[in-house]
Length: 68
Image 1: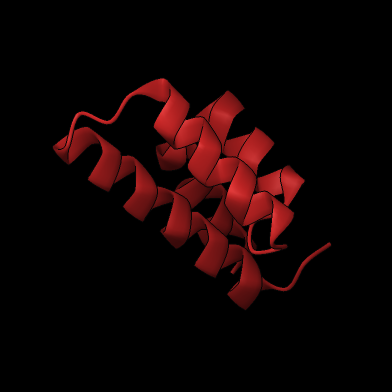
Image 2: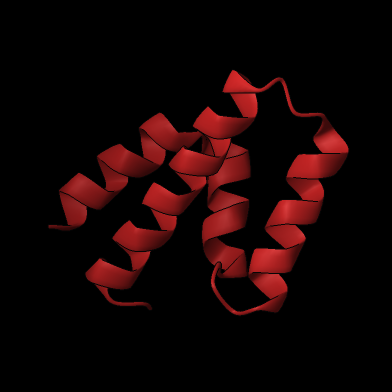
């Protein structure tokens, strides 16, 4: 299990990506390429990406608060 600070940072990064892509109406291909690049660079972990995809950010934030 990753530490809370790293998990929180990755969740915040995903939130920023989601917000930025929504603001600029980025297409799905751009989002996928961005996530893949961050994953390949070991910046985002698979666990966080899958959790974000399955549950959405609001539920991940709630889980992160519960773990604190």
